[in-house]
Length: 87
Image (cartoon, rainbow, N blue to C red; front, side, top):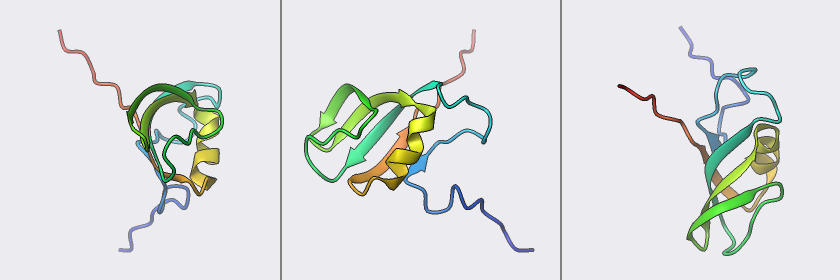
């Protein structure tokens, strides 16, 4: 049996993406973004904090992730996965 990987996720810069259709395009997501150029901030990203000159935590709209995927100066994007609270 051959394993099939969705073309949207194959070799993707963006990791931690929820199932397609789970989030509206205007939903705010948090992510860690790594870029090739020190000080560069991709469009539509709001910096929360800098980790180093090429890495930062950002806030953006879920719909803007495709722009990051196509940006040659973006190395990787790791979306935040909230932890479940256990009482």
